[in-house]
Length: 238
Image 1 (cartoon, rainbow, N blue to C red):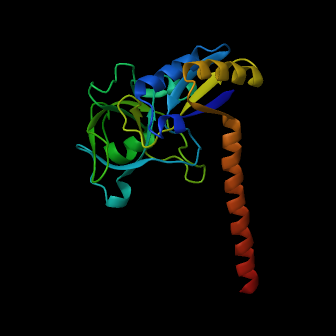
Image 2: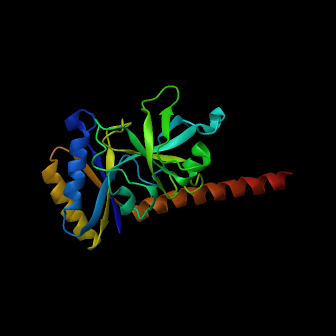
């Protein structure tokens, strides 16, 4: 019962991304729609096939070779982890108080802690971006459980979750994930009506999260079949 609502400013906004306040207001509108249990926004959704990476280092952490300095990034709003059934294992979730003018913070996953922090508690550790990029120095305030980021083949990767209000988003579009209680058709109709009234010039798309997972798995199966075919062909030629 997860529905992905893609939000794109479209031509009406000249391709420019919405400001964080408007994006959060749309997420609140979605959360208040009839039949919705939870709703929260993010720049990326798990298993979407998209990614956002940044080279980083943690103060006091292990010295890593360049290929291992890359972390995967997402920007999320409060409640996003709970919407997906993820758990905060230490520290706290991103909060409404993590505004653009507040101290920059980040929540990381277990794989991130294992690679970039090493021993000891990660809470309170400071990290910074390396080289070109827009990531500001920020403080780790929470740890969540591991979850697949881009594809099942890549699996779990070191991931950092920035508050959406503090993140320099890498594009104009974002997604609202809705966990719903009612029927699929009814929830799409309710969301379309509520969001269209809140943002009449915006473009909204609806997709079951289960469909997104199936597409990813189909692509992985296709790669496996093709690999097996060429492996068998190579064996035959040998």
